[in-house]
Image (cartoon, rainbow, N blue to C red; front, side, top):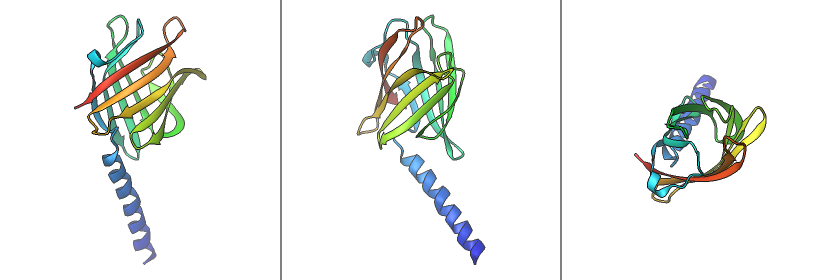
Amino acid sequence: MKTKMILLGLAVFFGSALVAAAQDPNMGTWKLNEAKSHFAKGATKNHTVVYEMSGNDIKVTVDGTDDGGNAVHNEWTGKFDGKYYAVTGDATSDMRSYRRINKRTLAIRAKKDGKATLSGTIAVSRNGKTRTVTTSGRNAQGKWVTNTSVYDKQ
């Protein structure tokens, strides 16, 4: 009987985690709408951002181009709990943190070698079709600049 209760508890826990992820408006593939976006001079443009489940964590995969038109790719796996998790492939950060503000809004922060390099918000529209990412971060010259990226859900 005890074993059945434990198994039932685990099934409910993991089942509810999957349902919550499926209902999370951030999940899915997002394509940059460059016409609606505003970038500081020399900013990296993330053309495709994918949020997907990876076990009990969330994986964020970013593909885009830097200011020279060269391809960039980075990946982050963690939770939307405000803790920093490692980033691979990003020249401007080695750790990233996402924190849920409400169902449709996340706070994002990044740092490299322990120093803050980016902060901002990610907001998904009520209809779930667009997401707006507003960030302040350091450019190649170390100056803080603001970018607003608008994405369409695919």
